[in-house]
Length: 452
Ligand SMILES: Cc1cc2nc3c(=O)[nH]c(=O)nc-3n(C[C@H](O)[C@H](O)[C@H](O)COP(=O)(O)OP(=O)(O)OC[C@H]3O[C@@H](n4cnc5c(N)ncnc54)[C@H](O)[C@@H]3O)c2cc1C
Image (cartoon, rainbow, N blue to C red; front, side):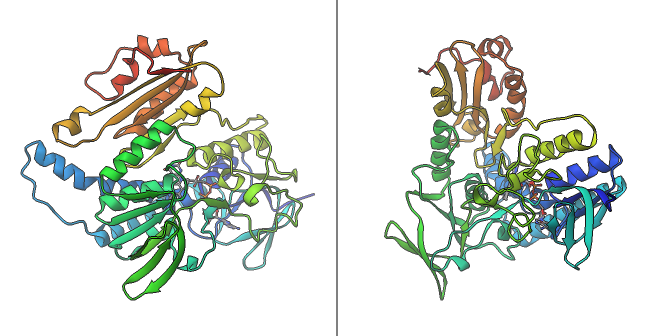
């Protein structure tokens, strides 16, 4: 049977772009790709990249304060959102062009269109044309999810933050996950009055408890009005903004209410179930370790599979799919010991098990320290950093590393290499400290603070 393409990719985000480019450039496959919004996907257009640029923007208020403490005669300035936003828009357009150019140079045929499946080898584009392919890769990502309640249509999501014409004066952020916490810190740093509701007992569920407490404390100290055990009951539009009735009985008016209460895989209305593709919880495409769906010609990678929703993971899954299907080199994406960062203020970098997870898996030793780092201590800031290692008592392997500090994302990348290689506590101890740094604490912690 002959097909229009060897591979048709639905979605031009992190996973789809990588798979399409590698299949075309390294395996010589005939590849088509459909993207319904902007090339680059969530990460480039409304996720990691614009968010990190906003993290940088939000850090300057503190940097100016620190500069004064270090003897600089700096006179305060105002943050101009419209100036920043114009530069941000230009940068995203530039990156979008880079992604498109890379695909075109690899020989991928791009369709600026929505694509849906009509059968296991056919997709239909928005103009009704159909394209056939030996293999179809679903890389359609995810979208923010807002639960339904009275006034929920007045809530915005993370997608809308990057489109603000002007910054709200008062914002309510609902959610306790990393996206909610990052935006709370970013907007607080940019001078917005931030209230954050989280219905659970502590933010950043699933992360290490000690780190969660540390970050929550730091966020409150910086002025985020964090209310745990609290949710939104209803929202009404009133003259001066949005009136929010909270489940704890309180009420207040905000200029914007941002829901960051989780994401759902983008599978609605894509013809997947009709084509026989099994979906799992929340509508995610169910895949095996090779990213193959229940229909042999259809694979899926990235957030749409609801495995680990991070850009580098989507990229690895896309690359592993190409190795397996187009290069005769069966390769599983490795989901073990994936490091990650939460770009709160301070940042949180983590890899491996949390203390709570490790406790269920045998005897452990916990090495942990919290201290005022030199840089902010000199500036008179109360910030404290946290360094923590979780060690298997018997094998001595470091099972987890948790760092809460400025630049923790940079530090954890390197600690992750050692831990992925199977480093023991004694390997860390044998490594000479780099002085004076914060990270030197990782190799100088001598006595466990807890065992269990
Ligand atoms: C606010 C925010 C911050 C984030 N920060 C980080 C971070 O710091 N680090 C990190 O690693 N990850 C971060 N992420 C997660 C990261 O963005 C995702 O894990 C990653 O983008 C997933 O890539 P993907 O290819 O699966 O999907 P996506 O990047 O979402 O791409 C999917 C693409 O498919 C398109 N599409 C959907 N349906 C169709 C269709 N039917 N036809 C055609 N096109 C379609 C969409 O328009 C989209 O462009 C963040 C996410 C958000 C929302």
